[in-house]
View 1 (cartoon, helix red, strand yellow):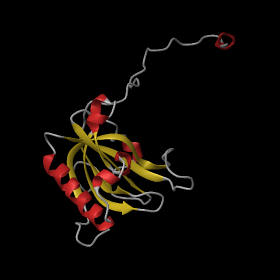
View 2 (cartoon, one colour; view 1 turned 90 degrees about the vertical axis):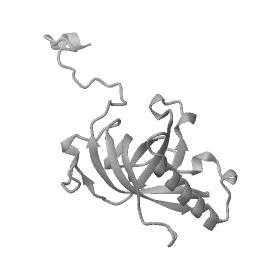
View 3 (cartoon, one colour; view 1 turned 180 degrees about the vertical axis):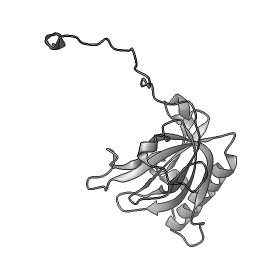
View 4 (cartoon, one colour; view 1 turned 30 degrees about the vertical axis):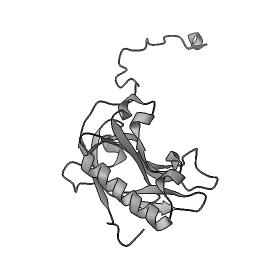
Length: 183
């Protein structure tokens, strides 16, 4: 990380997508031998989060300058900040998305900003609103690019869920009376 970059960037009241906040996972697109990480994708509305988007772009430009590489020399998938309008996901329209990861435990807190939250509290899901601290870094091991570290996350409020799974299944299935009828 460059010494002239702030240590952290705060993302305020952004939507959470694809959270793996409590369990280490390996991205299937990662190079072989990649370590498992905690991760989350944050959705920044283009109209509401202009300050954060501008700050992220400024920090990316600083890192690119240090790398002596221009934006047009890197493929879009080598940037942690992506234009959601280029995605086929409806929830990413008119937004930028940024995926942040970490190998290490990090603070996960509730609305009060200090009470730790566990997986059993079941408050984080794709679609809820959070605030988060992230930090950007440059990488050049397998390829050149800019990534984001996940430093801390706070639950802010509920929002419409992105998944289409059934949350309430009471009465959705008929009881099975006879075990022989299973097959």
